Image (cartoon, rainbow, N blue to C red; front, side, top):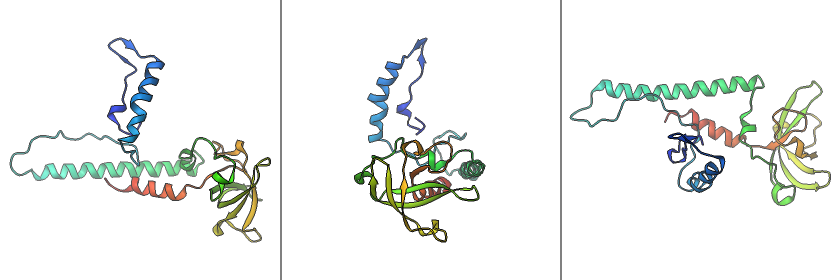
Length: 204
């Protein structure tokens, strides 16, 4: 599943026997999903770099061994940093979007119970044709039929003449699309992403 959970591994086949989809689904339900109760989900993908085997130590450990272990930790950190920089470069070119990838799979139910105080991230197209994400908080549902809500927009998103509170249309077809278009919307998870990136950038 990509979490580094050894117990969640299951081969496609074993000793000439191919496992069918029903068997693999049963393993998913009976073994993998329950692991979420006992295992922790890592903040970043596990990376296994080559390392020296763990052996019994007699006497004082040699200095070059400690230096090698330190270098491995440094190399691991450098590789993670390079990966983050490459991801940011691709995003700047419009290839991929981390905030899109960490969203829930379906939009929230369209009622005050699920949308009141919802942190909204919405895409707008301005006169110059540039698309910009704007953030705000949903105050209430205005019309379920028209899929409209009242939103209080963050101050840093407002331009001259913009209303701090306005009505926005949250269409199901515009929920977290793969391609950025005017009117696209999703949950504002910038704070969660910043925390995630900080954890990824920290040497472990």
